[in-house]
Length: 277
Image (cartoon, rainbow, N blue to C red; front, top):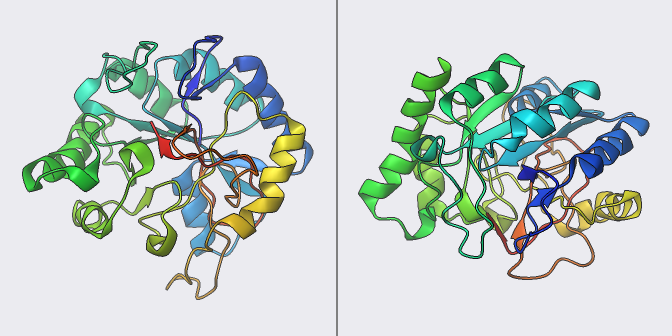
């Protein structure tokens, strides 16, 4: 689970990874025979029973730096990813982050450029609203209307949804299913873990090779496995972010999280924090 990719060092929410660090992290995956893919591709592979070696990569919020900084590195390493965008804030900024810094979000043209480059575009809601506290009208707008708007921008209705802040409850899951999404990403949904509440592992600038190794090893211990899927009939390791989905040993409550998803049992890098931005 990633967010912003830039050289910005003002990072109170731990959502920024430098291009240098992302390059090193993607190389770490490649050196271990792992390939980063979009969550949609990962879930299709899971249904076909061929998730081995695949790691789901997600980039929340749809920062403008994705196209300039992340996309070239993903292509260099032969990876794809899912960009979870906010169609109600296209071309805007991350106004929900009280501490800043302010960062520009992708415009409609930027989203189309990412899609044309082979990236999956998913919904992060309409305006980055906590669905667990939303009234019924807001819940509908954040799930159904955001999907319709993204379909207008890219020409394809998004398959995936990502819960803002990583917060999820049964009501939010029902709304996401009703809106027509095939899967949804959370962070650590616990007993709600399912195709519509996938665990993920946060990745940030501190994730060196040693930390990635530890996160990968701890993932099966720290997160519930995804329940047996009706189209495979088998249990698979949970995790959306980078690999199986293990939280790092030093996860700190209340710290925002980063990005990626994995429905297989193969790899995991990342860290779970108290609330994804």
